[in-house]
Length: 40
Image (cartoon, rainbow, N blue to C red; front, top):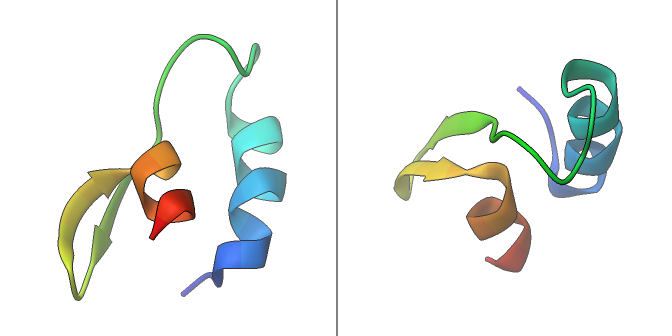
C-alpha cells in the first residue's frame, strides 16, 4: 500500500522520464493511472 504523498516518489523511481508512461494503480475507487490518483 502506498499513500498519495508517495506517488511522486514511486513515479520517479519507476519511470525513466516523467513525461512518458503511466503507472497503473488499483484502488478502492477503481483502476486509474498515477495522474488521476494524484488528482483524487
